[in-house]
Length: 185
Image 1 (cartoon, rainbow, N blue to C red):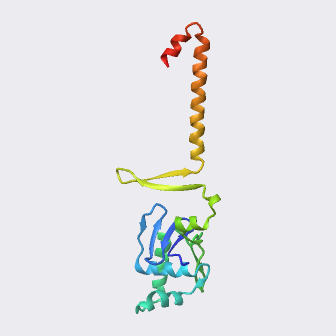
Image 2 (cartoon, rainbow, N blue to C red):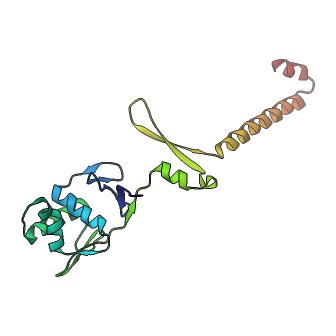
Image 3 (cartoon, rainbow, N blue to C red):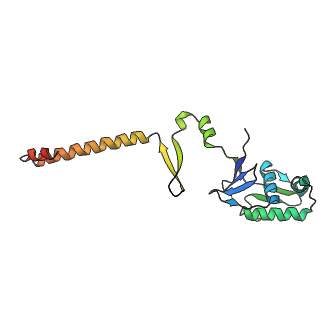
């Protein structure tokens, strides 16, 4: 099964097909066409050193555009800014001096909830999340567990026991006037 959407260091989502980068909240992070193609090349070749020449061929020459290494450097710099990455302490793009670049970020496929539920045994499906829109259009996430049925039953029994204890106490304390207490019920 091919995955079109991946997470990058669990900080960003990247849709390989549409080349759209978003943060975890869903805000789109603006990337130029070159940066999108460079990121796509990195994601497809995770933990592999890619030379500047290879990037030029796959990102620019494939579209019939001739550039020099300065364009690669500029695209990498812009992509680092967009990912809040740094040269000194890289989390995504590591420079391999005189060789090229390596994408060191963790790339994980995004599995949609339906696929995950199908592959997950029934006993492990303890919690599901529902997203419902309220009147203002905002989404609220409600969590529903299988144990909620037992929790509500336990709550009903607890309330019933409390009522019995209160009634018994009223009868005992008002032994002489117990007829009046029973009339209130």
